Amino acid sequence: MNDLTHQLNLLRHRQEAADAAAEAPSVAERPVSEAEVARFGVAKIVSNTGGGDYTITEQWWDPSGAGQWSDATAPLGYVQAPARDYGSCDWGKAGVIVPFWEQRAIGGALELIVNVEPDPHTFGVKVTKDGGSAGNKTTQCSFTYTVKDLAGNTLATAKSPSRPRPLKGAMDPPADNSYGLAFYDGSTLVLWDAGETLDVEACP
Image (cartoon, rainbow, N blue to C red; front, top):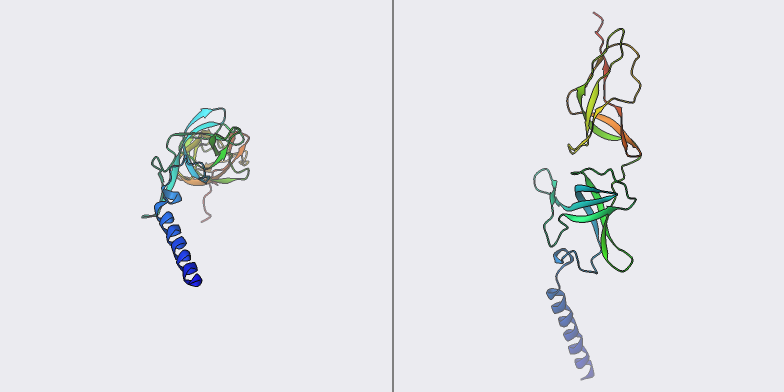
């Protein structure tokens, strides 16, 4: 009898646990404001409000087609939410995708932290000529470029490559939206290489 009672109690406890699990919403179904949900992801900068503060909208991955990031919807995702950069970096641009995470401030309030600090190393960009001239046998090339990130967001305009050019001689610019290399010096974008080539003719 004792064994039978024990088995019945085990079955009852298992059933109660299963019922409780079925009633509880999954983490993905819980509003982001629930205290026990501390998570991280990616977000799009909606606006730079200055001083390292931003407005962001969380991004959800859409695997359909070629795959792309899509704006999250409330209340499951953060939409037009205030956030701040962990290092107070103030050069984040609207439209750029950045990592974010939740953490507690002193006093227990939930806050959103982002990391807009760019990679200190060179990174790929898209360049399009927006001014200057090719140069000739007596003058140096002076082409300037509009620089965009790979998502198409403008980072800077009228940028001259910092990679040394010949002191004289004509250069050919790359086609519009060609790849280049850039890096940040503090908050200043430096275009290192725009992919220019010497304007030379092949020997007959």
